[in-house]
Image (tube, rainbow, N blue to C red):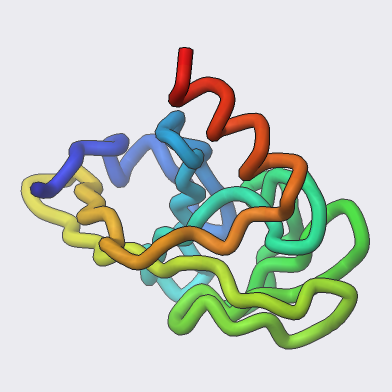
Amino acid sequence: MMIPVCRLADLPRGEAFRFENIPPIAVFHTDAGEVYAIDDTCTHQDASLSDGWLEGCEVECPLHASKFDLRTGRVDAPPAKLPVRVHQVVVEGGMIYVQLSQDAPNLPPCVAHRLAGEGAA
């Protein structure tokens, strides 16, 4: 199922948008005009990647500077060791749609524990 996230016109190049989901999704519009979606939470510690620094097809975590490839989710710099999930993006009619990955997210333990508690409520 494709989820409408935001209008492409509302997401300037070089910027990110945090889509509230469980877990949250970060949608990035690169300077080259490409749009990518990954899990918004760094796999090392609870930090929002949409608040990070976008350079090319990488985002740098604002907390400890781990870098994640937007195309693959692969982590390119420690302290994070696990990749983030990558979600399929379609831009149609000026709207950005995301299809969520079916893979399990790689969340830091503190976030996974909190989300498990919310799901049980």
